Image (cartoon, rainbow, N blue to C red):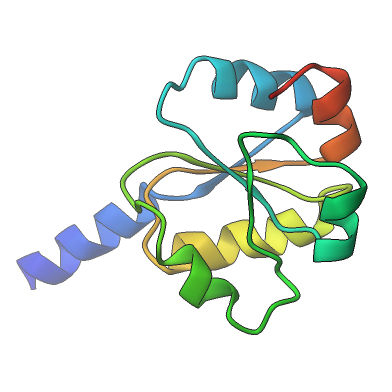
Length: 118
């Protein structure tokens, strides 16, 4: 019973944090071990990308398999073009055991690029 309670408490503490563009950028800059994940399609990726990001497309059936190669204990920052796909991907990552998941809402790649995120 105690183990179950501790497990539930731990899961509750690993909620996805949805942030606006300014908060997301500030958090990335303040996090030296950030893992930046672009969940757009490969076609969108070729049109422009953030150099430090890793493409793991939410459209890929092997999304979670690819994401499992990341460190679940390091913060993960997720973005797409606008915020819809990144929200879905962020929830999937949280359910897969990632401890710190940050979702960019209301903006996406173009907003990050305009802010100079590299």
